[in-house]
Structure formats: C-alpha cells, structure tokens
Image (cartoon, rainbow, N blue to C red; front, side, top):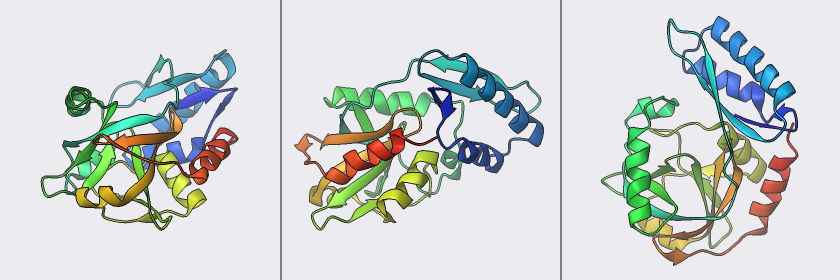
Length: 213
C-alpha cells in the first residue's frame, strides 16, 4: 500500500481483498492499526508491505516507491488462467523475479505474462489495460491474475471491459497502461519492441488517481 500525504488510496478495498484472501478479523484490525501509524509517521511517500500468515503476528515492511515512469513490456511465458493461487498476493515472488529477468534480457522494463496458448495476463507487479484502434479499453478477466485494487477502480473510472486478450490481439493495441497500488497509472510505451501511442484518457486517469483519498 502506498502511504502518501497521510493517506492510503482505496484503503477499504485493500482490507476487503485481504479478507477475501483469508485474513482473520484480528489480522485485519492489526493492519488497520499499523496503517494508521504509517499514515501519521511517514514524512515522505513510502510503499508498505504487510506480511500476513496464519499463527504469526502481522508485520510491515517499507520500501521506496518506484516512479510511475512509462515502461516497455516484453511478452514472457508465465501466465496460467487456471492457477487461482495467483488471484491472491503471495509472499513467494520467485516466479515474478524469473519473468522480470527474462524481460530485461529482451530489452524491456517489465514482463507481460502470457500463457502457452497465447492468452495475455498481467505483468509481474501490475494489471494490464489495452486501448484498441476504435478507442475501446479492455483488461484481461480475473482468472489466474490478481484482482488488483487499483485495477478495479480504474475499470470503473475508464469504463474498461474484461476481455480475453491473446498475443495476436496486441498488434491492434494503439495504447496501453498498467495499474498498481504502489505506482498508480503507468503508461506503456512499447510491447515486444513495437512502439505504442498515447491516449488522453490515460493521463486523465492518472490525475484522478492522484487525487484519491
């Protein structure tokens, strides 16, 4: 969760997702209390990770937030729409680190995970949105991907449809962006080396996200 100016955007939605992932009422209360402390004491923007496991105290770890700079994506194998475990944020990030290393090897900033039969999923740290030549905004459905808090907000704000995208559909994408609680709205400048254009709605969405309380 990004703590900035004494606020955590969409905080209640974060708590709801924790409940859906199995966090107990006591753990939720602890997260709420710890988040309140971070809101009061953080003197600069910080991303706080809350570690929750059965039978252990809730912990929190801060890190410096990455800027919402535009990114280049490379399609990388690693998406399985039948893997519902990926619909929850887990502590094991080895799969993400492997995908990120492959994207860097391909000359990109981040991986866009795809399945063996060409279905498009998410990146290793963010949800993916595409805008086609007709101006339609779409994002892959929640099946083997994280139902991100910022993703759900953005879907409503920009009126995006959930659509099963395939790698061959990417050739018709004229603009794209990512959503993540730690960075907000992140423009995508290229996919597999093909430059993308811009869309004014992406900047408008970024501004709207920055104003959330």
